[in-house]
Length: 439
Image 1: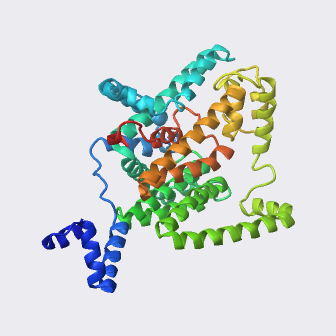
Image 2 (image 1 turned 30 degrees about the vertical axis):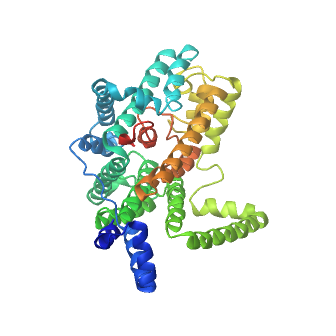
Image 3 (image 1 turned 90 degrees about the vertical axis):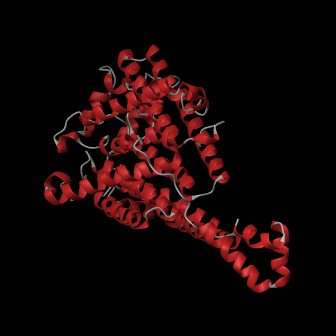
């Protein structure tokens, strides 16, 4: 510490130095001391450099969500995920010394692929269920390998750089061939298959750019990327992604206030409680009118763009097999379910119910819902404890990610899917137990 060097010539230890400063020149000395502490608190931490090992992961984040139809590269996502699966397998073979530590850090999360593969025993389509369950396991293993390879700070920067590439490609394609990136209502999809994909990824980019900017990492680049992601998010017209981005950034406001000290935290908490009280009062008196107006402002109707119809089909199927479900992916692959009628009714070839809870209830019944809830609660507990031990902005990113996920799981299907970016990152954000070097 700088204070130790300053007082070493007087033969004083750290405590004596503080007492000498306080008694000799209380005002100026304490002001200098508080200034040094403030500078140390606000000084960006030196993040470890990203090595060559980060390049394949950056390419994964960049290429996996891209639309093969628009880029004329069909099967691109499958090839990228196959490479990720092989990399995860190679990691497990080459680093067998870490296998027990890494797996021991994620016992509840690993129940997901175990349940998916086990459900082949009662699935309507056992072969397809086992295959997709194995893919789900590979996705989670790839996330574990990512955390062990680059650490949390590396993950945030890898996701940021991969999505930055997607931002640039979306803007270039939007200028060069606007007909390929815009829908009938003017919504952008960029280089991705749907506006919701662009929206969800740009809302994720907001979290990465904000944390890295506050951490002090290349602020010009991260600030520009934040503004660019905000513009693309608005252009996507994806209401779900917009709400997810807002809710994902909300914990960051709390963390910033908390880092400023108890006085600022108490003031902000008081304002938040007052605003919450006003909001509850307004909602109680004008709730119906507000909900209709909000849906209209977000470009949604009372069916949430047909989602409630999907949900009703899923809930009906759940009550047919409420305990263990009909198997992972079986509803969409079996010819004896109501999936063909659902496709006919919605006039869309959807492959999930736009609600993670309903998808899991149909596939695994009540057992799956319990496992899903346990994973979410355990993940929240562990990442909050990890942040409490090291309260930096990069360490706050998993909290923001989980806050964003809480919106997406209600209106999309980001988790419990094989070869999904959010599922991949869900496995990566969990801290590693019993091995501080990998935290």
